[in-house]
Every structure is written in C-alpha cells, then in structure tokens.
Image (tube, rainbow, N blue to C red):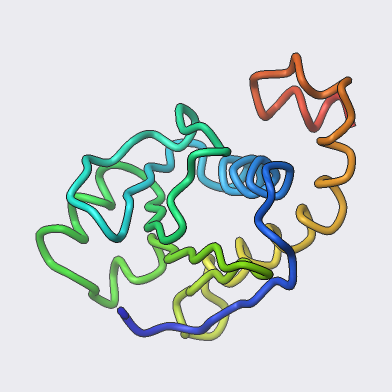
Length: 141
C-alpha cells in the first residue's frame, strides 16, 4: 500500500459500473494509463482497456510520463497526485488518492462517485452500446 486516503463507493463493480469508471477517469485524464497492480503486465492506455476485463486492483496514472516517474522515483510529493490506486471489491469500488487537502485525485474520486451514481444506469441502455468514444457518452446523455 502506498499511503493515501481511501474513497469508498458502495457500488458493485458490474460491467456498467466499470464502464462508468473508465469514462469518468478519461474525462479527467484523457491520456491515462492503467497497470495491473498484482502482475508484471505492461501498462495500457486506459482508452484501449476493456472495462469488463479491468483488473481487481489497478494503478491509474495521469499519463505514461507520470507512470514512468512513479516507476523511477516511487511516490514523491511531486507525483503523488498523478496516480490513483483502485480496488474493485465485491460490493464496493475503492479509490486511494493523495491525502493532501485540495489534491486533484480527491476531486477525480468525487467525479467518479458522481458518475457511478448518475451514469451507470444510463449506460445499460442499448442506446449507449454503439458509442465507442467516451466523449460521445456525454453528448448522448
């Protein structure tokens, strides 16, 4: 565990919730990359990740450059707000964010929470199935 503040969202991580999670993260960090926290697999651009196949524990970095900084330096004051540790539990989704007041990742966690509450039911609608680009989801909603 890398320190931080846990933001727990009481929401089962079913496919609709996973899709909303990816959408919400990309809305804030369009260049985000994701890394399976439990394996040595290489990082993937979040926009190319299949929400149904997200790992149960993942690290989401603002960009590949920030992932490289974390890999080289570990957690620092400069990069702590550029990664979110996400755990998909049986009945909740936990985002571990920078613990400093006013940090960007806490705002992103709140954005994710709101998206899960508001968009997840809509994403189940077949209308959204053909919209591949997350920006289209906002326009359609």
